Amino acid sequence: MLFQLMVGSAVSAINIVLHSLFTVGVIGLLRKVTLSASGRYGLQLSGVMVAAALILMVAHTLEIVVWSLAYHAAGAAPAGSDLLYFAFVNYTTLGYGDVVPVKEWRLIGPMAAMNGILMFGWSTAVLFEVLQKTIERQAALALPP
Image 1: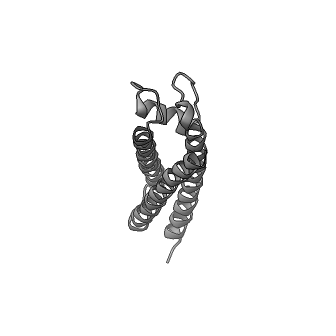
Image 2: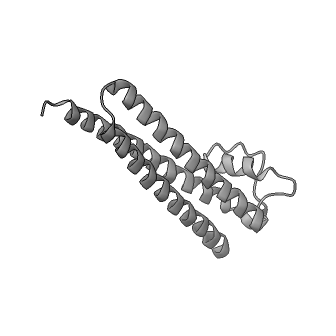
C-alpha cells in the first residue's frame, strides 16, 4: 500500500509541476495580450477567456496522459484496457467502473481522482483571476490619460 501511495504521490507531483508551468504560461501570455490590445473590450475579454480555458484543457489532457503512462508502467490496469480512457475516467472523477485497477493497485484510481479535483479547482481559480485581471486592465486602459 505504501508503494502505491508513493507512486501516486510522484505522479501527482509531476502533474502539479506541469500545471504550474501551464498556469504561469497562460497568465504571462494573456497579460501581454491584454496590455497590448486596445478597443473591442468585449471581444478581447471573450478571446482571453477562451484562450485561457483551451490552454488549461491542454494541460489537463497532458496530465491525464501522465497518469495513463503511470498505469502502463505500474501494470495497474487489467490487460487490454484502454489506459487513456481509464486515466480520463479516474482523473475527472467520472468513475464509470467499467475498468478498475488490478487489486495490487486499487489506490491509484482514487489518487488520480484526488489529483484531478485539485487541478480542476486550480484551473477554475486561474480562469477567475484571468477574467478579473483582464477586466481591471481594460478599465484602466479605458480611463483618459
